[in-house]
Length: 458
Image (cartoon, helix red, strand yellow):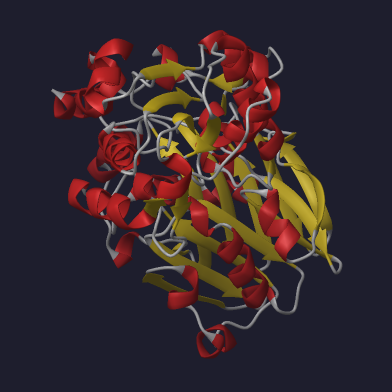
């Protein structure tokens, strides 16, 4: 999962991209970068770290131009090194291009091996680099046809923004796994992973980039081309459950409202007699509001979050996760003491974080603790860009709900059913990828890719 942002036709493209990436920081915290063009020359800057740590006024002043593409990285493929930071810039046939990719290709290893056998030399371990090599290979056919040809080869999730010296191009996989939208500001165009990035720079939302679409933005305006079609959509449901910002619109729906619907579904399926409802902030906030409003139970903030600690879900090591849990949330003893509480969270992946949090609430004096999870049990890894672990690390893959309840030392544990999740999605389950719950993958996974991941889980 990463955040991507692009600008065309604005004299301060670099500064706009900085603010766009700042709004998308929740989508990636390992590295940040941008490439900017003045119509002739492309300049780039990338580094490990958060957006405000990577960029400053002096660096932005060295990136003049009216076209830009930016990226914040959260790795699922490729190690955490600056060479794997994006945008990925190359010069081929005298033309420089820069590519920012959100998603994960399931046949990248297979393509890379084939390209290397033909003489291609790779500079990174990113799956995104294979897209650049495929574009270069077909460049003589023109950029649109090169993209169309690449789309016929790559499989998996990809929302991509491509910068050339005189144009910006956005394209999206035919299933529409990852969000990508188009906006307008001061006569220029912007492309972003989420609408919250448009809001920050006061850009007007125009529409989503369609699944399978190739959108070219240049001095002539917008030109849309069909890249590749699919018989179905497979929007990532976990974007709504966890990853997208609650103030964003993705896949045509508001994230905040969707999460409240999840809480309402939990209330219908699992009404509890407790003293109050509380979330694990911030991930459980909106489902907890929905649950409390639907049941009429009081809503309290039983734990207070330290907002200066990073998101535990995307920390790279177990040791760092455990440390973050200890400093991230602090129970309010006066509220919890002697109470029966319903704790709402958005998901349960490994279980180690929740176990530590439940223990802290118990030690703060809570009499009974019931946990409600606003999605079904996650039993299968994600191959399309979210860092769900291998099956051996997914607690629900090998343990029953009752076993998980005992492990977490809860008085009760309740998941939203798959039917409840689909109901929150307006009953249109066929529009979404539900593979992490069902194991039914919309795009078949390359045998070697999947075998490697599954073996790691054993």
